[in-house]
Length: 152
Image 1 (cartoon, rainbow, N blue to C red):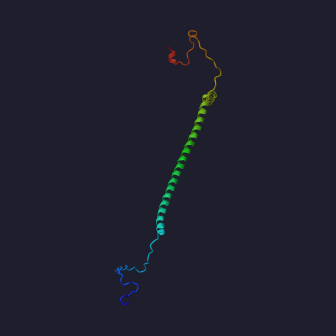
Image 2: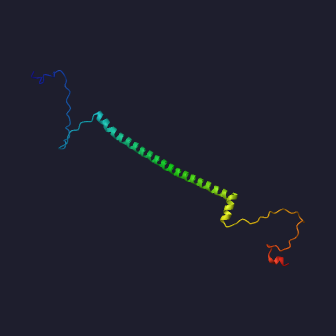
Image 3: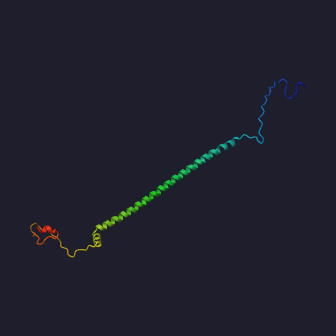
């Protein structure tokens, strides 16, 4: 047994030469060993940036949609204002047409004439058509003809 120093390794078995391990570089003082992350930890590390990006995009889309709704509401308010103005102008037009129709009526004409200071004639002589040659020439001068014409 003197030739066999280790009782576990038989002498007939060939022993492969051992490789020498390189020495690990010295660690700085205060440095600790890090444990490799597990698959679950790596998944969590990958999911947070993705969730942040997706939530940021969702918030931006929400703001864009809110802006579009605000724009649509503002446009509708402008359209309602224009429709209100059109309705007021139509009412004004109807009032003006009614006033014009009143002025064109006999009562309206009489009221306008009276308001302007015109008075009705005291006696009215109806004119009748006379056939040619039955009417004698006027004996007095025509009041509407100028004086120079009447002296001829």
